[in-house]
Image 1 (tube, rainbow, N blue to C red):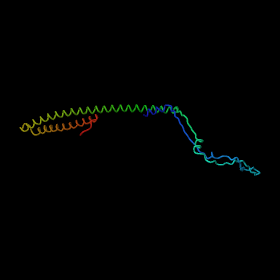
Image 2 (tube, helix red, strand yellow):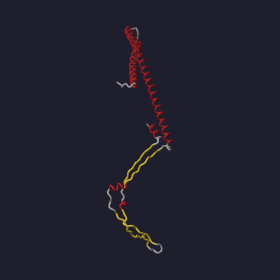
Image 3 (spheres, rainbow, N blue to C red):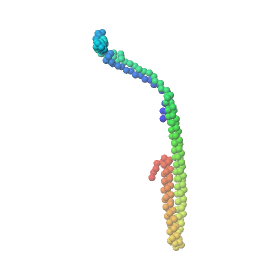
Image 4 (tube, helix red, strand yellow):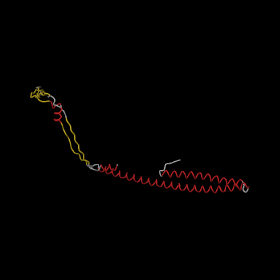
Length: 204
């Protein structure tokens, strides 16, 4: 919008104006009577003889009707105005070029944001995929540790192994159980992150 607005300033502009007015003056009612009075206007230097001048006597006429006064004193004014952007053409073109640069910068920023989002989604997918493989490995490890523990328990009950060796096998089995729980919750978290990027509402 800013670019289009700045471009419009490069175009010549033609405008028209019109006005109507009416004046009512008190002086329009003053008329001369034809009689003159001699009024002193000064003195002759040296003799002090008065200097007089004739001034016509005036009277005030009765006011005319509003319609007569309106018609006699109405005035109209109209014309056209053409504005050609010559002096400020350089400034306007500078603003247009600046707006173009801002548009290009915004487009580049949008493209970079889309690219960053795509990379983030790809990373979230790879993380979820890696967590799933780790979860599968933990399941297999637990199954193997469970079999070893069951076999060691039988041997321990028969006296074939001592308590120290049985304790080590039991610890490995319990550690495998803990690893499976950790990998399970890590997988759930990575899946939720991936669902978030695909617009799927989070549900706990």
